[in-house]
Length: 85
Image (tube, rainbow, N blue to C red; front, top):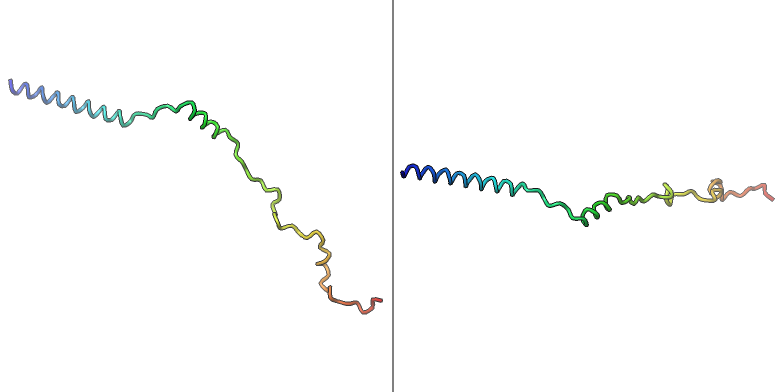
């Protein structure tokens, strides 16, 4: 009689341990709750928003040539023409 009750106690303890292990496994792998309507709306706004791109108007900003380059064409600016009247 004692051996039979001991076997039953071991079987019940084993079932409890297995059930506890299954419960812990399911609790850890439980998926997160579904997002709320507000969270979904904010996510959609972020995804569908058009990106702001800074497009330069000129690829050579502040590197434009002089408007009047004739001042730099004559390297002999200090030269005096001896035949000039």
